[in-house]
Image (cartoon, rainbow, N blue to C red; front, side, top):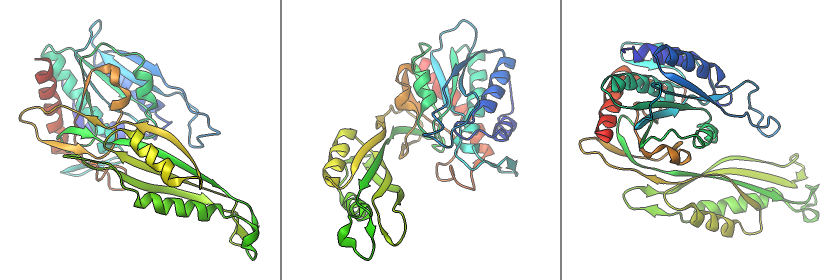
Length: 344
């Protein structure tokens, strides 16, 4: 059954689905895949506590799984339905499709559906899994991992420029919270600055050596958010910072170094720990190293993982997100080729 992945990409992009608000795009995919004669299943994913996650939605959210009725798939094509904010709709010219999610990852959804249609016509037992929450905490993948369908292989889609990833970095989210004692800023000796403690700890963390993996590269640390204090004339009694480390090996080594480096200057918490993953090489396919993390560590029950998809990670999450039409169509052929090689 043929379909136009370019037009399907635009339809998907035109449905707003920032993380926690994926219900509408999930409903569209459920009905679309049912119309393609798949047996389609919804996997409910709970909304987080809105008091802890102010951006959380209120409507239903769910993963979408599809396969031909009664089969156990040998290979499952998977990616995520959610996007980062802000939302903006689709447009196109002769070369590119533009809009939020074109390459991360709605163009990938379209390519995977087109490839699955070709694979099932060729007799390959194929499934499709589209999840929510990848851009935040992999909540959908965690739910899906509780209900695997017996597949031997999982081809996960992320923007890799249609190159097969040999590895993807892990992600370690770090939260630092420093405490102090308020005082009038004219008499700083009467207080204790939480910001001073935090700044000193962050300075030392930036100088801290991080693990390096041959052929993969170095771990990296980003200080993404700093908050604290009351007013310019008040010695601050509180301060916090949120960091993300892209890991290339066991996270325990990095965790121990962070705790030791911070010392008693702040409380340390690790709110996300996605492990580093190595993957197989396939002869004849161009390869790359993904410096980003994916849902793969949360889908361990879905078979041996591979990572492949159209689009550049360098335009994902930007105001110029786009996907070359040629690359999208090439991805359909690539997904079909890789799946056939895996099961054949």
